[in-house]
Length: 183
Image (cartoon, rainbow, N blue to C red; front, side, top):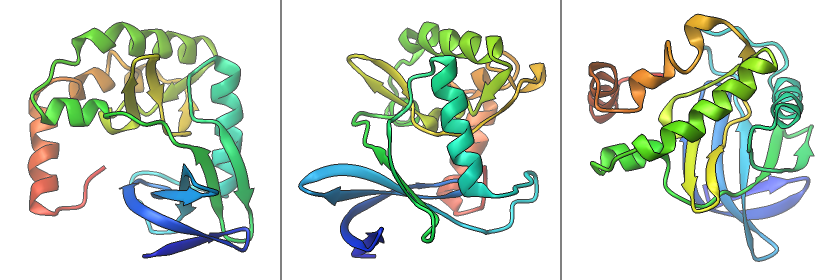
């Protein structure tokens, strides 16, 4: 894909950043600046039920900002195209750091602070390491997904399993390298 039209304006695509349950995220250029465009998709997901994905993203953005979770600013919405434009948070993800053999333990206090803020607001976020960018100004949660709080899906019961080279992470990495569909 060379360009994505956002509100009728073509934006050159620099690269695909990732694919999640709700959409594809692309690094694009607009007015000489980098942004992320998330294109909502309607591919089936066996373990997650969606309603209006675009509206869910907008609601979740508000819930996360109200909770004080550092997320990329929502720049614009293209409702007919089912696209969001977000600020681009440059830096390596926690997953990239893990895959490079780096130590992510210095970022555990920051993610635990996010987890506590989320819990205090009745939320869980998706603690998978691809959703966090490391920067000098702190750790950023770059997804807008959040759900009502359930202890079994909080950081200490679920997310922490993926923040080191555990069997769960190794299984995920091997599935990625074999091309199998995973979370």
